[in-house]
Length: 309
Image: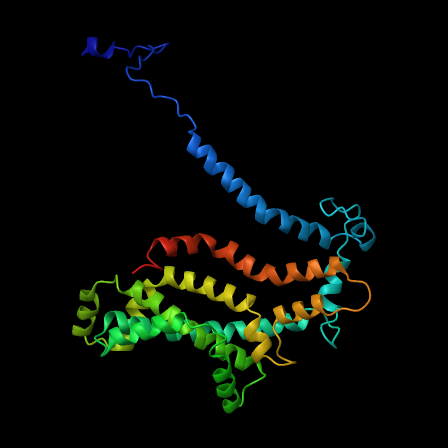
């Protein structure tokens, strides 16, 4: 016992070098990778240079803009063009800026999102997980409707909205966005729900689960990825739309894009390029903000099977 007590652990002052039998080869950039990087850089510059001109011009004074150096930075940064575009610029006969169009776009966006996503989610769920009669023919009809140009059905939709008494209002624009997005969104939801095992719904039906109970308590909590994908798609499409807004919106229900077009194309006297650039950026900021906020979830939803089938 005394011999064991006197044993002390030896202190290793230096570690022996470890000989690497198979050293890892250094990675070299291949010519193909260089070509891809060059192409991607050129593509990024193709989109970023106009955006750069748009941003710097919106902060310049008109005196500097008249000099013609579009790539130069502002000598004196000013937010007056932004204030003018938001609250004072003329769109047609009204000179209240983009403020009214912004709130019109918000009023159009929310009912369009709620109606289109909720209806298409339910129809996609029914077509994917329930034995609906004539499912194949209905899906083929949806596929055809998804690719019908809007200009072909514009006049019948005008007649329908006039008959409903909502033509020229925000509700007409929201209704048209809902109708036109239903085929594509239904197909997307149907393809996503098709990957859910049928045994899950059968087990829920054996536990006395109804159509709506299964959808709300089981299917809907599993739809986070696809809901984010559809949400970003719809926000981008509805907010950036011009043709539906100018056709069905009327004078008092014009969305932000219509006000922007009127501001840029209809002007008297000197064209305020800085205010026009600021107005374009104000119109583009909301969908960009949504995408940067939820972009990671958008990629996850796409990779999880949002658009496949």
